[in-house]
Length: 221
Image (cartoon, rainbow, N blue to C red; front, top):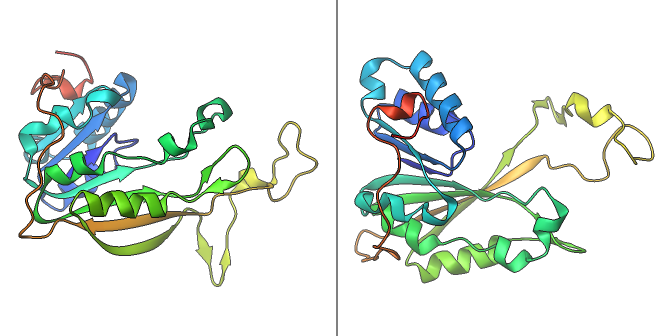
C-alpha cells in the first residue's frame, strides 16, 4: 500500500494493522516526525519493520518511488482544493494529477483511490471528476466506483455540524451555518487491468532522502 503525500497517520496505520506492507510519502519534515512518532508508539516492532515513511519533495513524489513500480495493491492520493485564494488562479492546473505515474505503481489488479471534492474556481466551483476520470482512462486505468465519504458525523437522519460552524468568523454576517461548508469528500476508485502494461513517467530522479532508520524521528539521513 502506498499513501502519496500523506497528511496524517491514519492510512498507513490502518494498512499496518491489517498486516500490509505500507509506504507513505510526506513533503513536510515536521509532519513526517509527528507521523513517525505516532506509529512508533501505537504499533509493535514487527509492524514498523514493514513500514516505510519517506520524506520527499512535491516535484519528485512519484519518481522517488520508482523502485516500487508494479508492486502496489493500493495507492491512495488525496487531491485537496487549495486553501489560499492566490493558489486558485490556475484551476485547470490544480485539477490535474499525474495518474500515469500513479498507475505505474500498481500491480495488475491493483487499485488507485483518489480522495477529492469540488474545487474553488475564480468564480464558480469546479468539479475535478470529469478530468480525473479521463486522465485515468488515458493512463490505462478502469473507473470502478464513486463513493461519497462524509466528513461530519450523522445522528439518525441528520448531519451533526461541527462546533466551529456556530462560531462567527471575521467578516461574516452572523453565526450559524457558514456560507459554504464541505460536508463530504468524493472517493474515486480505479483499477489497473490484469493484462495492462503501464510504464513509469520518470526514471531520472535520485532516491528518497530518508534512510531505513531515520524515518522514526523524521530526520534527514
